[in-house]
Each structure stands twice: as C-alpha cells, then as structure tokens.
Amino acid sequence: MSDSLQEELFVEPKSSTSLKLIAALTAVVITVLVLAGYAYLRRRHAENTASSLAAARPTPEPRPSPKALIVVDEALLKGGTTTIGGTVKNISSEPLGGLSVEVELKRRKDGGADVKLVALEPQQLDPQQESRYSLQLKAQDYSSARVTALRTGSDSTVAFTTAQGQKRPLERLESKTVVLGKPKSKGGEFLNTPDNPARVP
Image (cartoon, rainbow, N blue to C red; front, side):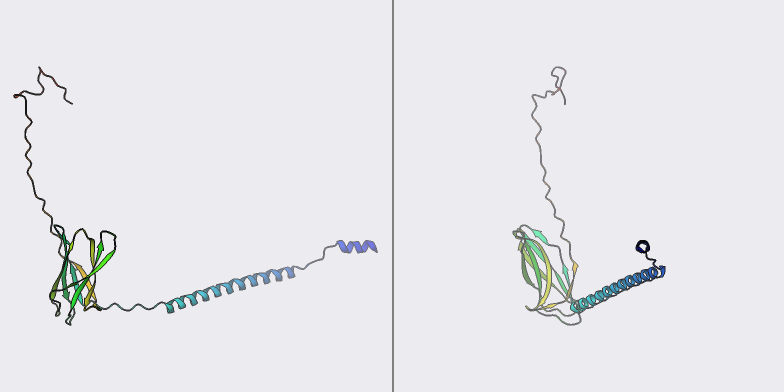
C-alpha cells in the first residue's frame, strides 16, 4: 500500500494540451487588447492636445493692404554729417495727411536705439502724390538707420511697403602728384664700375 502511494506521488500530473492552448490564446488576446487600448488613448490625447492648442492660439489678423510706398535712399556721407532720406508715395485711393516717417537709429556708443519722427514736406498727400523726407545726423553718433513706421499724427499708423531708392554716389578720391627728387650722385660717377666694384644683391 505504501509503495502504491509513493508511485502516485512521483507520477507527474498529466496536463492537457487544450488547456495550454487556451492559456496562450488568452494571453495573446489580452496583449492585443492592451496595445489597442494604449494606441486609442494616445491618439485621443494627441487630438485633444491639438484642439486645445488651436483654440488657445489667436488667429492672426489679416495684414491691411499698404497705402503708401516708402522709398529709402542710401545714407549720404558728407564731411562729418550723414543724411538719411527718401520719398513717400500715396498708393491708395484716399488722401493721407499729417504724415511723418518714424526712423529707428542705432547708436555707435552703446548699441542702443533712438527713434526720431521726420516730417514730410508736404505732409498732405493726394492719391499718387509723392513727398520727400530728410534727416541730418552726426556721422560719429549713429551706425545704422531703418524706417519702422509711417505715422499720421502721433498715434495712428499707415500700412506701408518699402523699396530701395537712390544709391550713394561713388566717392571721388583727390589725385595727388608726388614728385621725387633724384638722388645726388658724386660728380656723375657710376655706382658699379670695374675700378669700384660693388656687390649687387
């Protein structure tokens, strides 16, 4: 009787292959469901994030069509003075008045910026009419200038576009004639003669 008990203890229990197959299929189905759920949640999160960003981002206002064309001439250097200037043309179908050009100047000393308003002459422009602006500065004070706005009065601005104007004329260098005197010779003697040989480098 004890021998039969020992034999039963040492005999491996028989497992059916159908149970193993069902366990494997269950594991595969659970893995596929977990991956599909993760992909769905990730896609949904991305859509929610994109929609919230789109709602938070303000829609850009359409840029108004330009009403003026500012032609910027190259700076003219004369002596210690720099002249910045150009023309403004009214390209709209309505008159523009009280015009001045806002120019940002970059200081040489510290790299900071100054803003100056340059009034047009004349300040009232009918459609297709032009007017000039000009500003004179000390050349040693500023390194660059750019047009930043076209103002009507002190507060309101006019939409504008810019174009390259006149080039700076070429600077003419004064030609100087330098006359060199001939070296004095000792009574017309040659420097290198058979009687007085000298080494020539």
